[in-house]
Image (tube, rainbow, N blue to C red; front, top):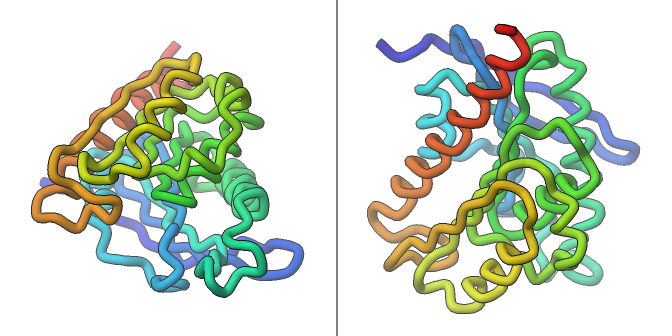
Length: 222
């Protein structure tokens, strides 16, 4: 039997905007995964996200979070990764203060530009139990700063995403934490080929579950 869900629409305030999110908390949850919206075409509208559903099926709460990303052609100088990272950090603070999630191990999941922001946050922030990055724009991260990440990190790229394979390979080499690098054959940057997102979901489930369980056990079962 799948766990029942508590669902709540939330507002996370920033200095200039109110960022929207949707929180799903299953029964007997053992962790919370912040899923950063990296698709400006889905502003304020949570997608029917297969990865998130798979995570919730194994008792991992999820917060789908719209950080207010603009399309690159609308932003003054492309997507501002520093601004996006600051907003991800604010969402992390919010989760660690909110009653339903404050005691839970926190994981981060991002795609493309959002994944680059997630990695930037992780260079500055302790207490993250795990990270999964899909198709990360690691060319937007400074390689020397990635060595500061302590959270276990999985990098996933598509086998047909030629521009990002080598960039992610270089980022993987720079990481000093526990890490894993996965190339999904036949997948492009968008991962919209049949079956590719299912592979991502399986990998993310295993990575987050392993590290969330370990952190949860350490926190609550001495």
